[in-house]
Image (cartoon, rainbow, N blue to C red; front, top):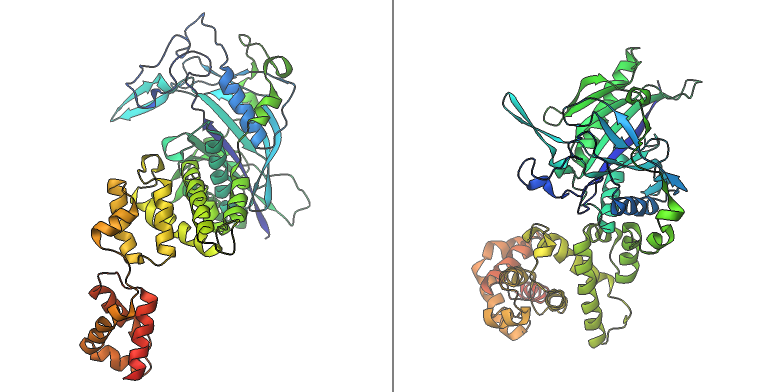
Length: 490
């Protein structure tokens, strides 16, 4: 049986506007006292009238344009009816047949993932479970939510995960959402079914919606599990016959049945009578919004590769966080000036070697030390560029660099000052190293013997001894060369 996964994603992005979607309440009530950011409109009191948040609408259009969506001439809000304790009005103000964006796409790994629609709606309240009791916190009720629905064109869980990662990067680039899945700023429901490629009918089978996905890995794992589960049902000639909703148990690594999936008619949509339609030409300047779009992640990655010489893999990491990307740009600008000052051949951009060196220290050394919190970094781009240049010039060793970087992070001091104070300048003078090399050879006869019988890795042991003797200051290339020359002579 030839079965192909058919996956579609429904993503909710929480917008970080100052006020809520349809009232003037503070939209930052996530970490504030329960039910402290609410009003009669949030609570759905009779007689209240909602007013649309223009900023939220403009931000949604920014996102739609970034996702290559078509912007219709007219959009409107609708009422979506369902009953649940977190929905005080008994309905949700959403959009049904006239969304703010439609027929878009996002390119992921060379594949265009088609986007069906992008629309705005209000968030529901939050349920807090304490033992046998449940508290309803309405601080989140009314928060602007942007829903993005893909077409069912994804066939691999990894592609689904990468789509979400790219979407998060775009939301952060637009500065309209932190898009943090763990905090609920970006939520995803994954729909999946299997298509029998040997069947003459190309009609899609009933889908299963997976909820409770709070990380990219969870999305990938849940879809992978569901593919296996549904394949087994097909092999047993029991394919799913109705739409259903399942929850993801991240600890057990399985999906669990919750309920049958509702259809659109179950929600009894009808136009929201209290909010007039949005006539784009009258209310929104689409051209102005489009002209203000920032450089998007894909374009930034490509530019980092071409302009600075980063590998595509390093460019992807260095542009993932826009605070980091901004820091990197300033560092590389300083390094370009350094290259020109020493009159290297390539004056237009740093060499690939220098870009790799800078990326390695940024990604593998600096980022873990500050827990990726780039806003709190006290090391200036100028000082980090100087630090990178000192390593590139072999004026300090990598081991000394570790200590220097730690001190820079504690004090914000210029690396040259730290090197002078701590006496960490790399030793390259052969006369200065000669006695140390001689001593190391004399003190380690077993390693010397191993090297002479062909165990070439023994040279690394001897080099390590030289580095210990010089407290990491010896130039490793010069020291290793001197060790080899001495061992050949003796």
